[in-house]
Image (cartoon, rainbow, N blue to C red):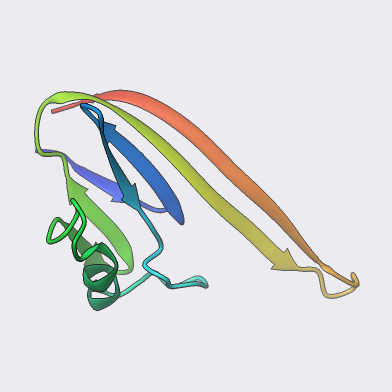
Length: 100
């Protein structure tokens, strides 16, 4: 089985009409969430007990051979010291891929 690494803040994965929504587990900043934060975030969802953390990166193992649609949304921002305000950018991508 392959592992799917979730790197952006929020993403969704559609499995045979089932949508899995991964979040940042309420962790902001350059460091990823802890296992405890994600366990709490996904408790009572279809991801409960299925997401493990490695160095702040969420890992989820593909449960079956199928075509998966993955949509990811994220954000990037930084403070421009000589500027008067912060700049911000958003990101979106969509991928359809066979996973086995």
